[in-house]
Length: 231
View 1 (tube, rainbow, N blue to C red):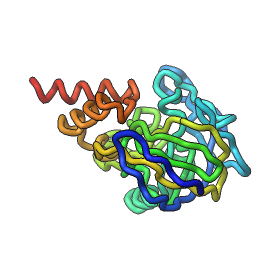
View 2 (view 1 turned 120 degrees about the vertical axis):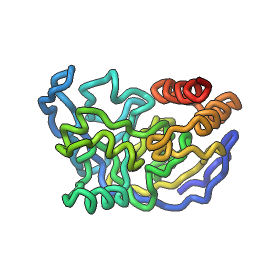
View 3 (view 1 turned 60 degrees about the horizontal axis):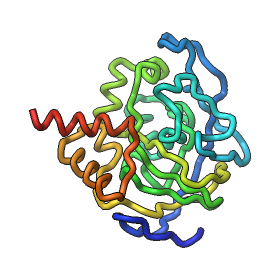
């Protein structure tokens, strides 16, 4: 893999190699009780290389584009180790795509990714972590587990949404590594489980210093955490 370059207000990281276990995209739209009426959460592994572009994987679909997809949620990654934890907790298999993820990965824990962290793939694709997956009612219906939204939130095993900085192909077996980690240290899973004012201030400071570009969908929660602390 190519040598990493140092980014602003962050740390150059040794390129520990991780691997894509499966690339998943929508298999079929399913009927859903939500306001849209259908959901694209049914992602399943596909064979061969798939192009990652600005708005996500070629051939993928998001039915509820107001809350899913877009540049800041172009790709959703989930880790084998977190899936294994859920499999033990739930007493059932968690195959790639069940959580609606696009990339099932190993060798790196997506829920521990720092917001703004960058992943460089062997194809040259460069993705940046933007925010945790925030569970919704559609996800709860998909899982069929009582109290799933609060359960998933408290666990902090969020996986990571990523924006695409450089396009490229990805397939099962593709290698990637962490190229850059911002200094603020706020991790996606920790933010989902307990979004403190201290974390929020660290994120806003990093943004003000030019070392981070907060996704609007995350920024509203960040601002709200600071405002709650000031009440």
